[in-house]
Amino acid sequence: MSLELDESQLTFDRWHAIKDWVEGVFLVAEPSSADESLLAKIIIDAKPNGMIITPMMLTQIPASEFELFMVESNILQPSFLPGVTSIMEVPAHVLTSGIEFPKSVEPVFLQTEWNPVLLAQMLEQGYTGGICFTGGKEEITGVRDYNEMDDMISLLR
Image 1 (spheres, rainbow, N blue to C red):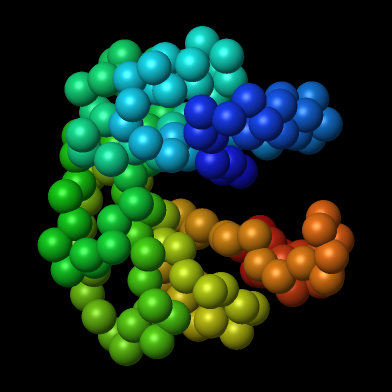
Image 2: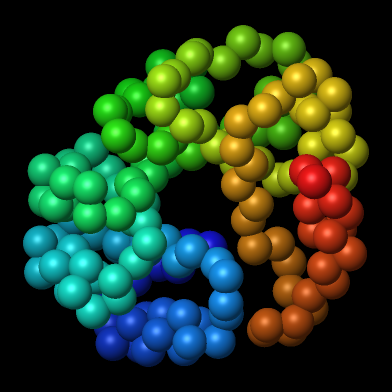
């Protein structure tokens, strides 16, 4: 589960509340900027299991401190950095178009507007990489229907 962290103490308070409340889930920080003081605060205060970075942040993060992820929006020419897991943002219609994705020695996660039908199609085509789910729509803050998510998790099992 990833959460955006910025200079506001409120984002860190939310981080700690979720960390204390949710068990068994790795928390990944999404820094709002490459500011060195923010990155240091995230590392020291939040102690994330991972961090979503930009190439500019790579030199500012201690090696092997935690898992690093980078969002790739150019799916035809991703940067694939050593030691960094790629999260490829792919429009749903592209997934079913038969496009051949570039290969990487590092893990890759696909992020799109998933639904059970699309996920089943990808699995039937032999996809074995990672899947990145997004938060989805909430009826009101903190309340949503998890039936579709439960169906997709069942497909992955």
